[in-house]
Amino acid sequence: MKVYWIALYKKIGSQENIKNYGTKVTEILKNYGGKPLVRGGKFQTLEGEDYPRTVIWEFPSYEQAIKCHDSKEYQAGWALAKDTTERNLQIIEGVNIE
Image (cartoon, rainbow, N blue to C red; front, side):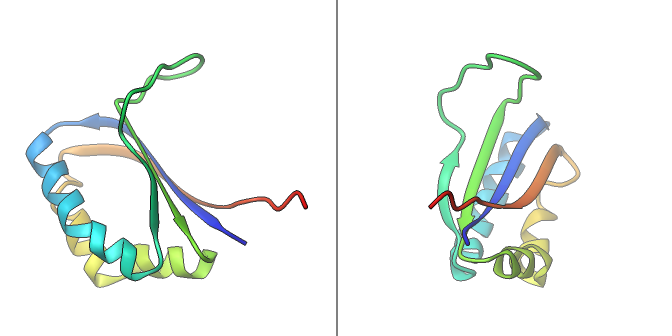
């Protein structure tokens, strides 16, 4: 079953830090089987809170997504932005309706 890594960014205090983070972690996420589905872009909030950035990655399994997040490589990348960024991050299983 596919798994999704969903990041809702509440505050981005440094565009430079978030750019450096994104550059560093993109290949790390891909190495764990991650596939980018949403990375910012045009949006309209219809209900609820407004988040300036949403990012969604698809992973082949829950285990791979967790392993990626917990890896030393990913954590080193996140360290570039975590002090100037506030986000909600969830790893969640998809659903198979067939």
